[in-house]
Length: 328
Image (cartoon, rainbow, N blue to C red):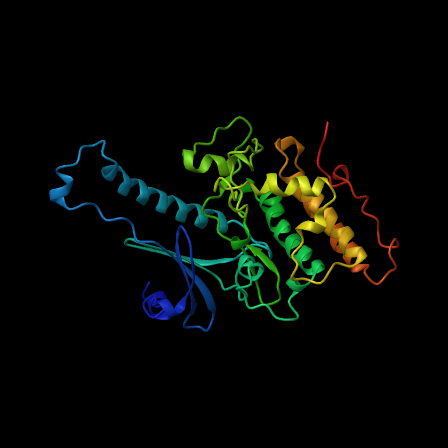
């Protein structure tokens, strides 16, 4: 613990590179010269003063919240530690070590130099003119990297691991722009046939979309914004999928990038169909991660044919039925 404290100058703000529900992340250089990311859990809530506690009944929310929060904090730490110590893949952030001392819960990861995909897409990352995110092919390659990491969790980890919190802020980019999936605090081991999984209500919705449960209007999807008239959150799936199905992918593209070439637009449209399949209402209609990886590999290959005249690139056969999703 002393080494981590010294490496961050007492967890000073100048070393902080991010924060989230679990706690804060710090960049640090250890004594041996290795640069790492140190994820420090938020301190547990303090119990109320004795004079206050004496006036509280056992059913008061304050008397329940502190122990409950401490249990959640510990569970998230143990989940991430237990899962990351079992996996090894170039598209997953590597765990170097941990520290559990007193109330301190700390995980030490490889430092992923270019930060989160979210920061780059929102314009806050250190993008450069040679960034792959400045091209459509590069963005598809980043999606492919992330998909390969998730495929490893679903298909090659034993037992399989369900991440449950895939989003652009949990996809990190290293010095070579390789994407790595991070943040396993909400992850679960996939239950064996017939086994039940106990979860609290707060986490149920997130798990349902990945275990094959339905995606309904009540599931809020990040990025949908708010309805201008009612002010209620919009569901991004309901907003975007109809455009994809109407062959209007071009209306959804990031206008900061150059218009896609003929081969790139073919690949981008295919990725759009694939994305629509991934959020199908029924789990049985969604592609497996192996099918997603295969589809993204085809899209990347099509982009690589950009020097060929239109029509000579490997055809993708653009339709939702061609993306690999299973249908009756």
